Image (cartoon, rainbow, N blue to C red; front, top):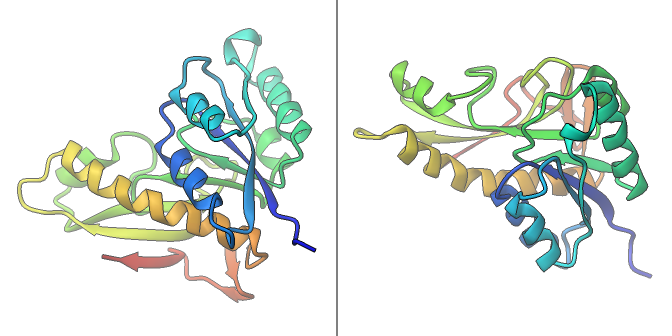
Length: 217
């Protein structure tokens, strides 16, 4: 009898390149997870087309239909839970989530951020790395807590900053690594290997360092 796969809901707001990486990874026989829903706050998000093309249930919960963040997040929770999600993955979801939402999915809510956290929380991370003269940049998958971009890292991919890099060139190099480490983290969770323990992360029962598992080119 086939083992039940972990049910994963993906929240998006845009084109969904990380979503596509997860769709592709879920197609592997040994993936251990399947995407039970793709939910967007924007009806025109191209990621919804990616989901439908892959036969994944796609839904829109527009933040414009709700008076405040709390009521929007309650509707979002209802939609996610209605699809039986065990893990929620943020993939370019451009909304700040309420503490109530984060607590509801504590320990099973992941995000990806284009910097080596705790460096460069927030926006414009690639330009900020260039402006600082950093030799390395990268991307972090982390558990989500109530602190914006502040949850404990799970895995980081490090890329070199090359002479002549622009923010756009650096972003493309980082995005390539996003597409490998996000499915990796989801597979770890789906396989029961990964969990959040307070402000730290356990992988295979061992505490990871504060930066998580670090992968270099």
